[in-house]
Length: 81
Image 1 (cartoon, helix red, strand yellow):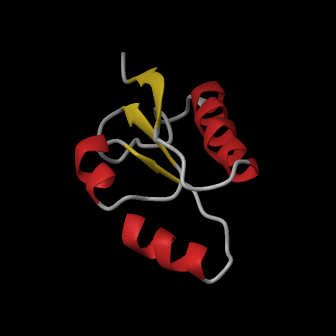
Image 2 (image 1 turned 90 degrees about the vertical axis):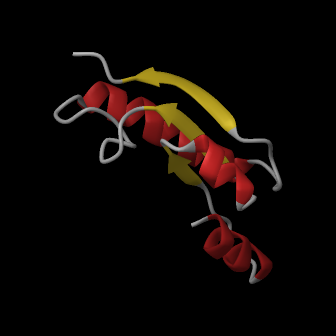
Image 3 (image 1 turned 120 degrees about the vertical axis):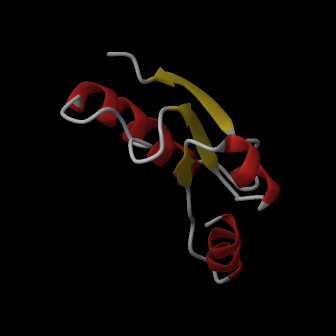
């Protein structure tokens, strides 16, 4: 996804992504990104946890107001039952 995001940025379209796998995503150099400590399939938050999903989404979308490239932002969001 980072490579696609970079291509869109070159075309003048601002992008941001959220990933649970910061190590792999960081290699592709996305222009703006947030990383969580959540499990695969729950990147944007735990199922039915709308408060967590909103926090992650708002933090990710807020990056669009910043000029790229930015260092990835590590969100302190985990998957605890």
